[in-house]
Image (cartoon, rainbow, N blue to C red):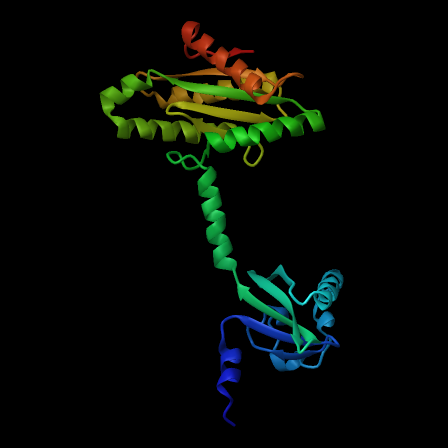
Length: 280
């Protein structure tokens, strides 16, 4: 039997389509409907739409159905995961000549779009040169929120500001491409001394770096800075060394005073004890 063109289009369209009547019975579903979760459309026809969902999700779906019955202009969007894929589902009520007929659910696979958005969001907070470190804008945004969290949960917070001494001389001697390679190497060394997914590290300006140590006091910060300095000295890079300053969050600090104290210590170190640590 030859199907009408509209039926063929509904069956073969890449988006999922499912229709539920006013008694919550499934009366139509194409093969791509996310609500089927891999089932054959014919196997769910006539069944209660709510029974297609887990007990945890059934209450949420029922609430959506009740909202849609009351508002013909409402569109409710939800996301659902199945078989490693992410689906966006839009629910809307269907009325004909003022009579409520049921609900239509359209769905589409947004897995790739979500992945691309995630990659773009990640790139927007990363330093363009080192790639693995955060950029300064994101770092200072997180610094403000981490100060609030540290105070709320009553744990110490330490900041290390790092400057590459004589970097201009190295650049002038070997060129900017070689200088960029050194900055990348320093970035990789920093990642070795901090805790992944706990602490934060960023490149700040041309040849400065920042480390925020979560739940870490001055003693811990000094050990981290000392280890970083040792790793860097083992690199044996001509001309340059690291200067560092440390501050520990105090009761009346905002992010500016917290940062300024570490920065002041850094420049005190650069003036008097290049390559050695002075802590606040």
